[in-house]
Amino acid sequence: MNVVSFYRFLDISEPVVVRDELQALCERQGLLGTVLIATEGFNGTLAGERDAIEGVFGWLRGRFDIAEALDARWTTAAEAPFRRMRVRVKKEIVTLGRPDILPQRITGQHVPPEQWNALLENPDVLVVDTRNHYEYEVGTFPGAIDPGNDSFREFPEFARELAEKSGDRPLAMFCTGGIRCEKASALMLELGFSEVYQLQGGILNYLDTVSADDNRWDGECFVFDTRVAVDRDLSEGGYVQCHACRRPLSAVDLESPDYREGVSCPRCINETDSDRRARLEERSRQVQLAAERGEAHIGAKI
Image 1 (cartoon, helix red, strand yellow):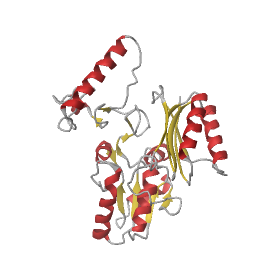
Image 2 (image 1 turned 45 degrees about the vertical axis):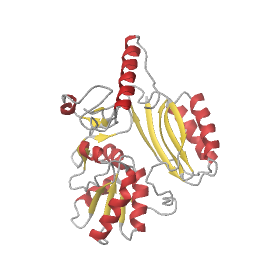
Image 3 (image 1 turned 60 degrees about the horizontal axis):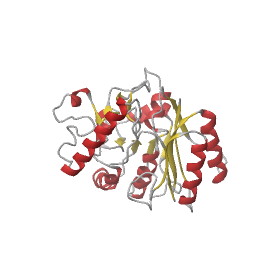
């Protein structure tokens, strides 16, 4: 099955109308996945037949008068990494908490994967992992700075502190597929950094492009679908996801007494109140019953 991630920053005046049109189209095309629509653009991942996905891309290009091909990251999966098709309207297609930051106006310089290692090896360059801390723990580039964030909304505070401490040193930024760096690099430019680079296509493009001998990635790469993480070969990795907090869990985490499938893990055991834990336990029970019937359970968001 084909899986494609894509995004585009552009001005959308009627996101609700676009949502309804795109939802209907994706359903007609038999696709699964998630697409976010905002006044600043669109961001999504789709799974299905390539011709069906290309049909959606053609519609998007026509709908928004995009002359060139959409930037897209194609992979394959043995099974669909999504269970439904959802198109949603959001304030931002990637939530920085700064809707005034518009990458379609200004963003950092894109660096092809083939040139990325030169930045990693330059001692004058600060390499910044713009992702969340739990993603950083799964894998990163050696020497990369971990902002220590639980969500991308916390990145602006980290950015301000970095600007105060580091002056105008060159920055090299990366994320999973490139979209977070579009906003993060625009923010860094606003804060006064003059030399800001971002890994074109993100980590996934790097893993797909750079040879094994030249690959500097250390660990696995967290992804936001049922694969949870992929290794250096872009094959499904060795992590599973906690259905309570959505964080990745290693084999060691699964051995913890705090891990209860579908209910809690060592990372969230102290974050869940009794009411939410009861809902999670009920959902886990429903998932088990569905599995016994040979059905896939698609529950409401908890």
